[in-house]
View (cartoon, helix red, strand yellow):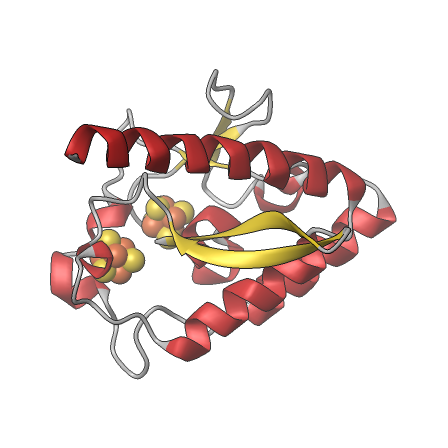
Length: 170
Ligand code: SF4
Ligand code: SF4
């Protein structure tokens, strides 16, 4: 792992260590922790280099076709929260990288793949503190070139999913 990637990932992990989608409430009580199914077909996509940070903590690192060549993680539905990957820390949101006046900015959206989560329902209100933490984590992450490239590819993919869904709903 490069120094820049390690710094970006560790800063993002720290920001999202204790900041969760609902303030003062464990949202897992709402849904019996639906996003921690532990099914053998469930996996969490890892950001570039993240496999090196999380491996050896009771997780299985696996290959997947859907993550631009980067690995995924499988768990048994329980984990030491200190080692949970970014995909779990930011769920059900995602920090997109979008162009702005010749620069890049982070825009946090509800991940269109996260329909299992009750917090994606229209009237659900995710904590603004959590949204800010995901945005700040995105700003750290986009500073590493490899992670930046990954996030842009994921941005395009998520925007395509949203566009397709909007067309189907018309
Ligand atoms: S599915 Fe959503 S509400 Fe349920 S534990 Fe995961 S993030 Fe929280
Ligand atoms: S790694 Fe932890 S937080 Fe993520 S899905 Fe598995 S049990 Fe849930």
